[in-house]
Image (cartoon, rainbow, N blue to C red):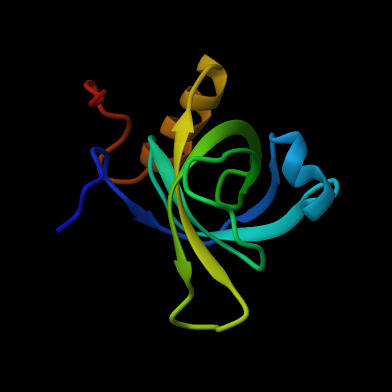
Length: 125
């Protein structure tokens, strides 16, 4: 059963992620490199070598490979588990905390433009 409210797109994009918590600054320094497994307007499944606890807020920079754009967005970690593909990695479900409309617009263009008949006229909240 899929709990996402928006359509999920399976794609790998390069991600730079860091915790916004001062307590985790010691653990993660200035941030770590990661990648998406899938992406939607409301969040992403991110694969990373570091464990991010549920409830933590992270700052993410995603390089959208298909459209060659970068977006910056904060997100809340909703779940984390060991990767089934690689024991040295973790997968985290991150729900985006959209505070910048340009970020949302960039994601809409990236995920829907020239796919599925273009940009939708309605988007779920």
